[in-house]
Amino acid sequence: MELYRLTIHEMRSLLDSGEVTAEAVTRSIFERIRRLEPEVAAYITLLHESAMEQARYWDQRGYQDREAVLAGIPLAVKDVICTKGVRTTCGSRILADFIPPFDSTVAEKLKRAGCILLGKTNMDEFAMGSSNENSAFTSTRNPWSLDHIPGGSSGGSAAAVSADECIAAMGSDTGGSIRQPASHCGVVGLKPTYGRVSRYGLVAFASSFDQIGPITKDVTDAAILLNVIAGYDRRDSTSVPAKRPDYTQSLVEGLQGITVGIPRQYFVEGMDLEVDRSAREAIRILEHLGAKAVDVSLPHTEYGVAAYYIIAPCEASSNLARYDGVKYGYRSRDGKTLMEMYRKSRSQGFGPEVKRRIMLGTYALSAGYYDAYYKKASQVRTLIREDFLEVFKQCQVLVTPVAPTPAFALGEKVDDPLQMYLSDVFTLPASLAGIPGLAVPCGCSSYGLPIGLQILAPHFEEGLALRVGYNLEKNTDVHHRHPPLD
Image 1: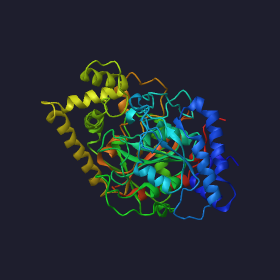
Image 2: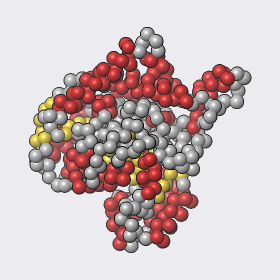
Image 3: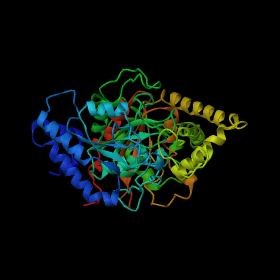
Image 4: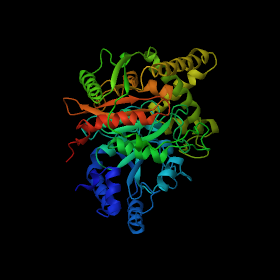
């Protein structure tokens, strides 16, 4: 048995029965990391010693505590989520040595559930990017083809799960940063409804978009992790005090009575033909399982990219103003005056993509331009949200491709920001509306690169998306495939 290949629910069963130990699984994963990390580069920080200590602790204590649903399970966490006493860099030079004195709410919940923290995964700097090439430390590579990108910004988490360098991982999604890398790496990624999971301790990029979610090997694991991290948190003013269901109860076979909407704006000219074909084959399978497919329209979809790339940089400009070299983070030693220290700390500490977005946001918020850009984009955001509210009167879920193409080659779009931004064209509208989205594998390109299907549901109806994804997964063999790393 290859222990590193286990899912959360498989490992839970084997731990509880005594067939495997957490120490053996954790050792197996670290051996896997040792062999693959020089090529994949999924991690920024590894915690070998403390992880092995945690594994031995749980093996000695036993697994009778039903509240500790992740007891002995080795997980990875994206390096934008604060972990007490463990370096949290956000993939940026400006926070290269930052060690948080507190845990994020999600980290607290994971620890309370008994997980073993393997390390912090690589990411685009401050979660700004779609390829993982914007990290200040290294570029993560796609385990399915090492000369291709894994997606971003949670590319390190997706690559680690895909390469079996962890059992599962946490990511964050602002405009597609869980769903897109999950699709490119052939794993499952869930962006919850905005407000479903606490953002306390998530280092902010765009506060009205950012949401933490799981990246896993199958849909069942995504439901298990969402059970752990979802829920109201008084420390997050945007957290919603909605009742949290048991998401594993949504994983029932059959789709009778489910109407699936197929938005025509997501199947457009210029989209990769293999992506189109894989998505349509997935829809055919859903129909075979009892779902009814109907054509629907989301008329303001074409404005999603423009609206997002005004609103998100505006919020980034405000959030990143705190990194001035005074209280924490990188501080330039060259400045002779206060203003010079500010300027050099920020220019040396931030990478080019972060600087680009700060400048875009600062410009859009400046006097004389606020109404023309930020206000107008916010109005468009409302129209996009209303499109989704209206279309969900006709269907329970929407099914679309995750990205218009499979993973592209490293370096292919790094000098063309517009083309890079357009790679998120199918994930951005859901982020603008704040609805949940699930990415599940649905096919493979002729070059062996994974293709994902996006399942969108109404606000706080993650269970619906999980049900549809679970049934698709049960009736395809795509998620059983493994990258050709061995």
